[in-house]
Length: 147
Image (tube, rainbow, N blue to C red):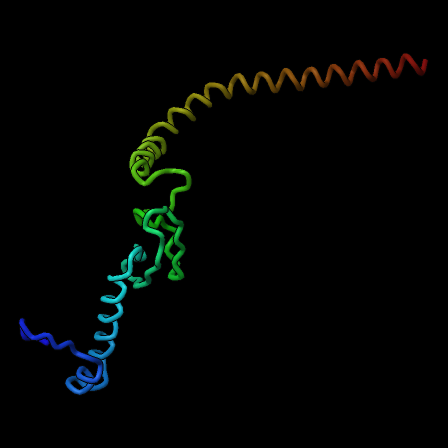
């Protein structure tokens, strides 16, 4: 009831009588559902703003939640993308380290690999030469055995 001190709570028949069958009744039903869910301990809403799905999880345990709306799996505690074997408090710092790696560290690392690639090419050439010499030696030994 819109009256501040009134204790009467609207029921669906009241909304139907006042508004008729239509979008207001649907809004009223969604309101009742949201209000009931708000009272459930351990409820976790999907982080997708377009999704209204809610799951019930143990509030003291981190759980991987998969919503049928297609949202990637997320953590029930922090609602961030699910993070295996990492506490929620550490996720942000690890994400920052990863961003630093992909924006700068990887380039430095790959640059060092390019320097090493010259040495790798020389090693591969030496191995090929050794294989060729071994084949020649085997052919010579074969010839000696036949003659």
